Length: 279
Image (cartoon, rainbow, N blue to C red):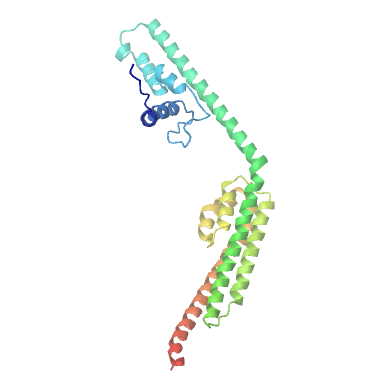
């Protein structure tokens, strides 16, 4: 009796499994995408937790949209097109049906708007309760860090000049920088403790502008301040301080340019004198 030899086809089976996965993946992706509520076709997640069957419902049971309903009502009232030969009773019956469809659209729209408003309320509530303090803390951290970075860059410049044997006067610039950041901190604190509307776009734009380096108050004065002061006159004294801060930054830039020019002149003189020392 002949022996039946049992062969091992594990490699073939592995290749077949890989091929099946590759072939079926686009189909799985297509189905998972079609039931996503957020329509995120290129989401990193293959399966979403927010699914809906409305896409299939709209595909199978197609409804006329609002422009189509309005056009059809216009055709009925004018007795044109497909409705040129209908009776008055038929026109009333068809019009009532179309009007009901329009009412259904409006009801769905209002329902969706209420749902969106509710979700926005939840988002803002979550922000106020969990993320607001952390958000402001991060802003404060960035503000402190940008001062430290600015101070570090200035120290590196002075150190490099001293290593090259270049003597420069930088105490005035150092004092200006210190006064600038102190004044900026005072203005931001005044804004936060004021009775101004913190939700106004003008308020947010002003805070963002104050945290920018270099500081440019010219654009802010035209685009933001002139409109803001008409709505909230209480911002006027704070605006004067902001404009004064802008002038302080101009003084810093002037002093910085003078320092750089002084270093450049001293370095040229240093390079010109160096060969004579070696003779």
